[in-house]
Image (cartoon, rainbow, N blue to C red):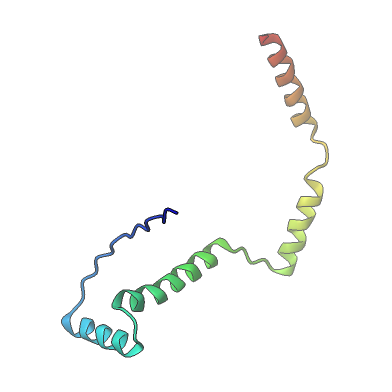
Length: 95
């Protein structure tokens, strides 16, 4: 059975010797690698930031307006229907 090789990307980071020593000591105290120490919180923060950007929060008034717009979205639109009819006729004429 073949085991898929896992690829890894490198992230380079520059810091002062004091901060590096602090991070190395904290990672050692936690019993994890420096990479795991840095990547765990960074990954969680990245997920949090992206979730906040991708989530839409609406007030009760805005939610009601949104639902009303959705409810009215499927009502016939005469100009759109006419345009679709012209397009179908144009497509038939191309054959």
